[in-house]
Image 1 (cartoon, rainbow, N blue to C red):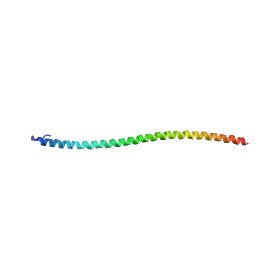
Image 2: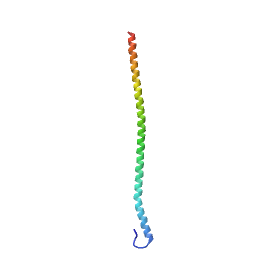
Image 3: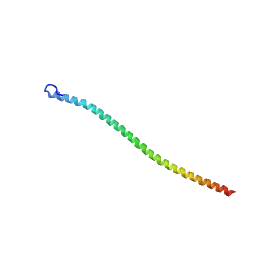
Image 4: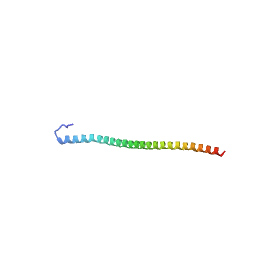
Length: 90
């Protein structure tokens, strides 16, 4: 990297220029990594929120099924009472 003469200021300038040329792609790469990392965090947050919603909906569905079963059991009892009541009328 040294130029032919012995002028240290030229060497330093060449070094600084090379440093700038090498640092620019590194900065761009770092910016891309930061951007992709932020996108990944966003997707992870969305995934975790979807998981929470799915868990809540699963619990709600189980409760609805239980209430449906109780309603069906109540309807069976009501039907039996109606049959008993109609038999008593005869």
